Image (cartoon, rainbow over the protein chains, first blue to last red):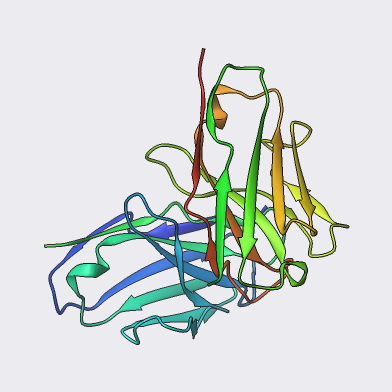
Length: 107
Length: 121
């Protein structure tokens, strides 16, 4: 199984900041990686797929990069509505796996 | 509009069964593979099962293999998760999601709102 490890687990930032979340895979997953945002009581929402492609309708302050075993999600110019939990997901093979999540707090 | 709607959740005793449904609308159901993902209270996302667009391939998480069965009815634009021999650790919100078979560059782009399954004596 491909394990995904996210860091940090918790992040606190202010409006206007730039933050980066890292996702490390236990094996090479090429660029078969997606990023999701989940708000309390809601279903996850895909932000990025293929490691770096922005899902239609997602603000351009979100960006993704990486390939192989190391990936990053960057949010620039943080907004209050970005407060959420962020997950990475590998789609290289089954079982599909998710990172443990990064909780982003906007102070 | 494009949407998925789960139903069938509830409270059930350990060892009993439950069937979840996920009704799709607004898109060509037979073009997509369909997934179940669950989330235990306060925990992260946990992939459960997938059925391919043509129903021929099915894969399961090790934790549910032999107890859960995924299926689809293309005439009803609905897919199902039959859960048998339920355990306390199966307690979670169950989401259905639209995707394609791995390996894929595409994420799960449409999700249902989730249905709660509580396994308790």
